[in-house]
Length: 184
Image (cartoon, rainbow, N blue to C red; front, side):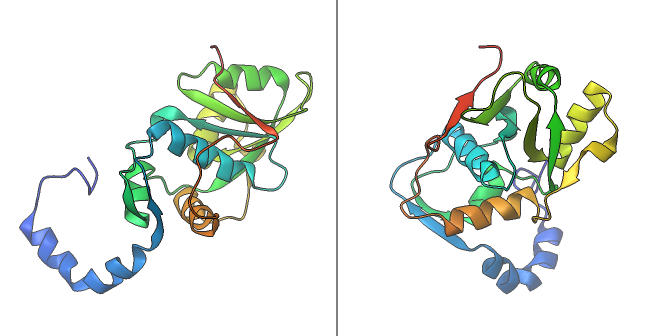
């Protein structure tokens, strides 16, 4: 259960009401969306944002992590949060080709892979700390393999990326990158 799906509690609402101005100020306007944006397009946009971090060769995320689409109209930070309510840090890891293959065996995982990376080369992936910790546990890697990107949380980074992106927002795989659904 999240704050967006919890049963209404009037006492909680009364307590939160004192912060109305701060909450409204934090719900920044990002863009006007002329059309609905699907969960798949949000995923591609998020992977594109990750691909922009220095040294990224493969952006990795789970399609199961995108919770809802965006309706046409005003896109605000709260709508982004409803779709991707994750606030862990962004990290990078270097993986061997075999480790990347094993990562692809996790259900729902998708990649945005830089063109020209050979299949026999180790790669630097960028993802969330949570997802990287799942991967590390599955592969038996020590936590030290995760390197912080010194960026804000994944939610804050994505909002910054969307806010700074040219308008109207576009939702396509960027030139020089390929969208990969492992195992398909």
